[in-house]
Amino acid sequence: MDTLSVLVVDDEAGMRHSIRRALQDFTVRLPDIDGEVRCTVETAESGEDALELIPTRSFDLLLLDHKLGGMSGVDVLEELGKRDLDMLVVMITAFATIETAVRATKSGAFDFIAKPFTPDELKETVRKAASHLLVQRQARRLAAEKRRVRFEFISVLGHELKSPLGAIENYLNLLKDRVAGNDLDEYDKIINRSLIRAAGMRKLIADLLDMTRIESGEKRREITDVDVREVALAAIESVRPIAGQSGISIDLTESGPLHMTADRGEIEIIFNNLVSNAVKYNRDGGRVDVQLAGEDERVTITVRDTGIGLTPEEAGKLFHDFARVRNEKTRDIPGSGLGLSTVKKIAELYQGEVTLRSEPNVGSTFAIVLKRHTNPQDTTDAAQRIGTVVAGN
Amino acid sequence: MNKRILLVDDDPDYLLSMQMQLQGAGYEVVTANGTAEARTKLGEMRPDAAIVDLMMEETDGGFGLCHHIKRQDATIPVIMVSAVTSETGLDFDATTSEERSWIKADAFLAKPVRFEQLQRELERLIQG
Image (cartoon, rainbow over all chains, first blue to last red; front, side):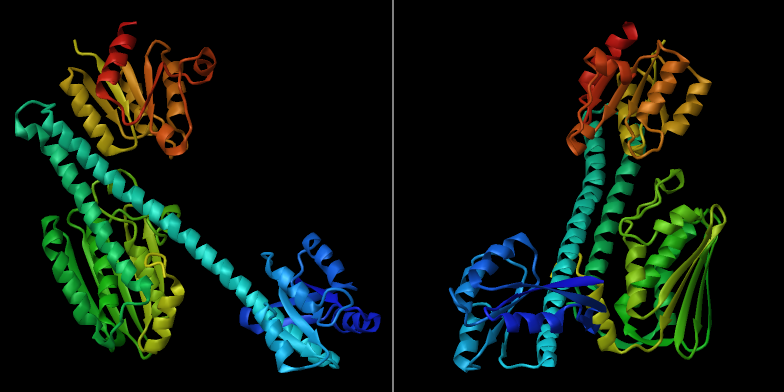
C-alpha cells in the first residue's frame, strides 16, 4: 500500500500530539482510482522549521496552523508557492472566518479546517485532500503515458512512410540513369515494386484515417440501425475483382437477426479489413468464408481463409499498431500494420472481442463478437477512453 | 568472365536496386534476402566478393554471416553496409587493426551507399 506522508505544523504541542494520534496509520480508501493509502505523520513546531524540513522529505500533505509563533501560516504558504512542490496544504484556522479561508486559498491552500475539530472531521478533510492529490497524480501519469505512446506512434509512422518513399526514389533514379539500358522491359520488376510500395503507402494512409476516426472520439459517430449483412456484402463485392484474378472464391453464410445498433462506418472498417486480408493473404484458387451469426445479444462475424496462416508467435503480435508479418510470403503484399489493430479497437467499442485461430500454410480464422445493442453514449465514452493517440487531444 | 557478387540484405527493394546497378556495371549478382538464404547460396557457389548488410533485426545478423563467409573461405572479400551510423548513432569502421580484429569485414560502407564508392571498393578488393 502507498503511504501518504503528512507534516503537521503547529506551535501547540497538544495539537501536534492529538493530530498525530488521529492520523498515524489512518488508511484512506479511494474508490475512484481503486487504491488506498496509509498516513504517516511528522511534526514541526514553527513555520521556519517546516520550511527547512520540507525539502528533505517528499511530503504529500501539509496541515498548517494559521497562527504560528514566528512566521504565520500564510507566510509559509506564500514561501511554498515559490517552490514547485507536489504537495497539498490544508490550513488549520482558529477563527473560521471567510476572510482567512479566502486568503489561504488564494495563496494556494487546498482546503481549511477550523479549530476545534473532531478526529473524524480531520480524517474527512484528509480523505478529501488525499483523494484530490492522488487522482491528480494519476491523471498526470496517464497524460504522460499517452504522450509517450503518441510520440512513439508518430516516430514509427514516420519510418513506415519514409521507407517506401526511399525505395520508390531509388527505383526512379535507376530508371533515370537507365542502369539496365534503354529497353523498358528490363525495368518491369522495379516498376512493379514501386507500385507495390506506393500501394502500401496508400493503404497506410487510409488505415491511419480510419484509426484517427476511431481514436479521436471527436468525430461524430452516427449510431443507427445497421444491417450487418448489407455491409458484409458491400465489402465482399469490393474485393471480388481482385479475388477473381487469383481464382479465390468468397462465400457468405448467415443465420439469426443481423441488425445491430452501431456506427455504420465502424462496421465497414471491420469487414473491409478482414475480407481484404483474407483475400490478400490467401493462396491462388483459395477460399474465403464469411459467416454472420446473430443471436439475441450478439452478432458474431467469422472470416476464414485458406491462406498463408500465422505461427503462434506471429499471431500474438498481430493486433498491435504497425505489427506486420514480414517474410517471403508477405513481401509483395501491401499492408500497413494498422488494420487489425483498428478492428480490435472497434470491437472494444461494442464490448466485443476478436479471436484468431491460425495455422501456417493452412489458413486463418478471425472471429469477432459484437454486442448487438450498445448504448451510444457508452461506446462514445469508450472511444474517448481508448485514447487519442493520433488526434492527440 | 564476369565477377560474381553475393548480395545479402533483408530489404527486398534494396536488393533489387543494388542488383540492377551491379549488373549494369557488369557484375554477375546472386541475391539473398536474409542470412539463412545467404548460407544456402554459399553452399552452392563461391562468390568473388560479398556485400552484406548488418541486418540488425535478424537474430543471426550480418556480423554472424560475415564470420561464416570468412571461415568458409578467408579469401572472399566482404563489404559490410549498414544504416546504423545515421539511424542509431553507432559508428563502425574497419580501418584500424583493432576494429579489423573483431569485425571480419574488409570494408565498411554506410547506407545510403554511393555506388561509385562501392564499385571502387569491389575493384580494389577483388583484385587484391
